[in-house]
Every structure is written in structure tokens, then in C-alpha cells.
Length: 154
Image (cartoon, rainbow, N blue to C red; front, side, top):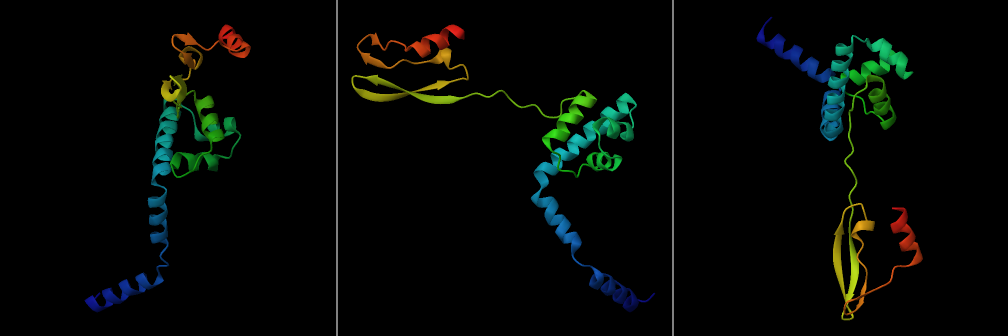
């Protein structure tokens, strides 16, 4: 094959290309964050299946999905729902996602010498971090019945 024939063959190949590879590359770039997580899940699922001697078909039956769906999951290109992730975790006995404990930070107004100040209160346990409004020097506002009941029930 001569150089001219090679160039013509190359140009024919390029002319037939519809640009789908460019669209796929753009898709992967735009969705990189969740695709990487999906790939890590796929590796974890495949490793667990291998450790337990379990087939993809058996996992599909237990999850109530088709074997093709499991195949998509283990390829690492599937955008999984929380329901699917939860089923995988339950059936395989693994943790794929762990949600950190919720903590709050809020500002509670304190009245000192008739000037309103704000104090930051951290933590989810509001009962133990409650700050009462200061009305007069060394005098604290009496808790309401609801606040008393809340502190007793805990």
C-alpha cells in the first residue's frame, strides 16, 4: 500500500466518524465525579462477590433485578439510586456509603445591658447548650413550661 492510498484510507475513516467519541469524552468529563464513585462501588461489589464465591446472576436474583442490570453496575458506568445502593449493602453485608453525623451551629441572642449580642452554640444536643436570655445583672429568664418539660424528658 502506497503512502497516497494510506492517506486516502485514513481520510475515508475520518469522514465516516460521526463525532460520537467526542460526545462520549465530554459526557465522561462532565460526570467524572459520580462516575468515579460508581467505579469504586463496582470494584467493591466485584471483590465482595469473589470473596463470597457468589455469581452476578445470584446477586441479580436476590436483588430482584435482571443480570444485565448487575452487569451495568459492575462495569462502573451506572448512576445508582439510593435504593439500589441500599439493596447492595444489605444483600452483600457491606457499607458503600457512610453519612456523617449531623451537627448544627446556630446563634442564640443574649441580651446584656439592653444591647443584643449573638453567641455561637455548636452541636446537635441543643438542650445541654441552651443559653438563656440575660435580662438584668445576675438574673436569668425563667424557663417556660415547654422548656422545663423538654429538659426533663431529655
